[in-house]
Length: 168
Image 1 (tube, helix red, strand yellow):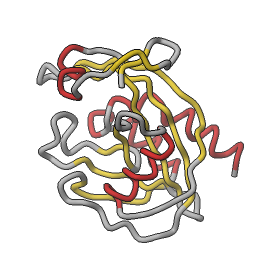
Image 2 (image 1 turned 90 degrees about the vertical axis):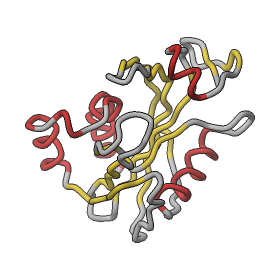
Image 3 (image 1 turned 60 degrees about the vertical axis):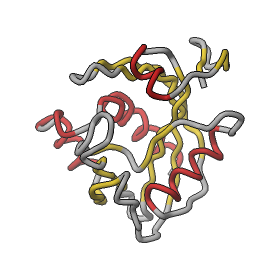
């Protein structure tokens, strides 16, 4: 779903065409914390079309045509990580990142948060691994090893953490 700078839908385009041309499109990122305050990270499958093997938020994707973003976020959380959670939208942000393979992420990203203690059962075609991480350890890892994390995660994690502490 293509969007303008305000996040309003303006058309559609094939996912790979949007990532080749760098056209602004709607996306979402889900951050799941457990009841101990640890963030559930996923390691993207190594054969993903970009950012394979990098660590990132619990799940992320794009809504289908006509699908509400919150519904898409819940659907993909179940499809990618095998868990369900109530989600709250925290904020939106826009970013653009060019990858070494020529693809471009130019996304209007809706960021959701949830609390869940279910044991993940990740889809191996989407997820290579997962782990729960304390916020302090994650901040240190982002500073010491930024190349191990996705571009969008590095952009929005601090704001997610600020919101998490305000809500919970």
